[in-house]
Length: 186
Image (cartoon, rainbow, N blue to C red; front, side, top):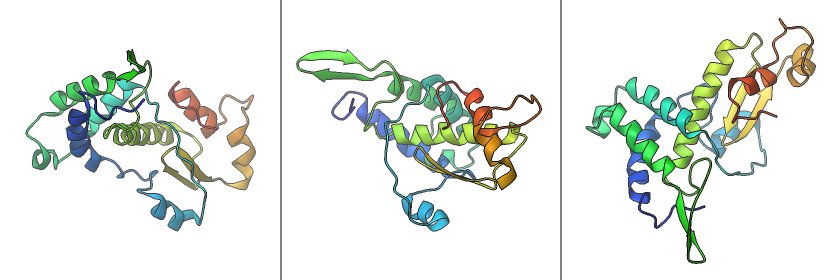
């Protein structure tokens, strides 16, 4: 549900301004659809709802904030306080429908200024950890929103999509899906 016109919207916008410069610095992320198209050519990209685990997203944001040399230029708040505010905003997913008040049970609120930012931060950390720990790495792995373009060596393409009986064989798709329950690579 949309968080527009809720008590958390302005705080969410404030946090989005602090966190936005931290996204787009990963080798696995593209910054917008034009950048994505310049890498792979014209692709139809469909936007889906954001659903990231809040605890993991807050941890990812705090780690990025702690290593951000430009943070002091954007705010006087320390990373721990920003993380606390972010946790509050991401868990404040109340909305009104037909006169009743509801609480969204999972993920970040749609149309919240910080939702897309935090989803990107979370996915960047997820991708970096997955690629770092994988035995087989694709030639290219680029993501825009929740769409991923991947180029694999021909000899590894089948094993990328099929689980192997060999425990030593690395299959990035299955490896990535084991990294985080809430993220499903397919």
